[in-house]
Length: 111
Length: 112
Image (tube, rainbow over all chains, first blue to last red):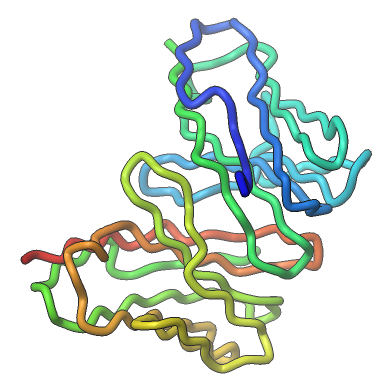
């Protein structure tokens, strides 16, 4: 049982480049999330999707877009990367108020 | 806006001592509270989930309590081991869509 799988694990971008972070879950969860983790700040919600076909902004959505491709997959896109987006990105999934499951993270550096 | 605080930010204990980790939140209207463990360079692993109607939850050496009225949760780890060294994060569920509000975490080191 793979749980939540994120790709890539590491990425270095130049300022202004774009990229898409991929996330897939195999637990048939309705809800999926993207968080970013910065030193000393805990995890902050970027976007979430409560069900297939719906997405909504979280606490820090600026500079990001998302796509809920199907029930399994939820991608995060950086259209024009900035150094402030250097962070560790986590994808998660859950069923409403049940336990949340997290991927292993993507470590992104923007230079 | 819900704010979640974990104090202390870092903690070092000798092996065998009990660990007590604190989490406080400002709005008592939560659906549940979850404790996670994060090892360096890794993702989050769920340890315990306490529903808003519960007072505590136990799993092996771990026990978590919840006092909604005072906005506090405590994670107890009995007889700590070096393998318990990690960062522990608490998070509260603030709505029915599953959005979690996290604390910044407590970094724990258990020395042999």
